[in-house]
Length: 176
Image 1: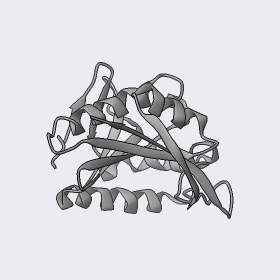
Image 2: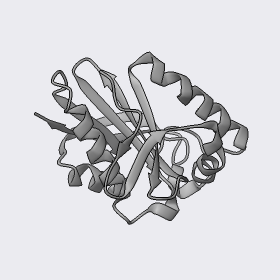
Image 3: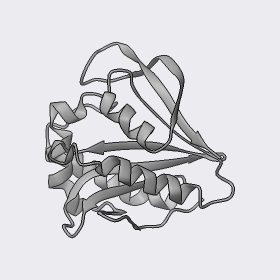
Image 4: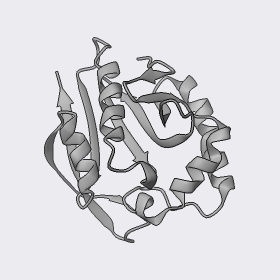
């Protein structure tokens, strides 16, 4: 499966990330509120964001992982990221949004655009995502884009910014 390098919506541009996005990535990746439910530790140095973005530049070539910067038109500044990971006949979504962009519906708009793009491939029949059981904002995004909660994944993942113990997650999916 191949995703477009750029996806446009009414208000957003999803584009490939670049090392030039490091300041914006570090700003959200060092914010405890943003990173609370993510599986990555909060960043403490911008060099971590630079390394992360350098890795993102190469993963597009593998054909199974597609990270985009989320920008709000007409500003090219990254306000978050969304990633599609291809597996067999499905796609897993992951996403993060800077606190300054919360509450505007941007993530639901970006996620819907990626789901629509995924379902443009006739071999893709399922898109899924999971979230920490306490992450109500992420659950709302999934529900807004038509995903249904399929169940609880018990002791699914470590979230180093909220607990040292494995936490439960809700699995959501949309299919055709």
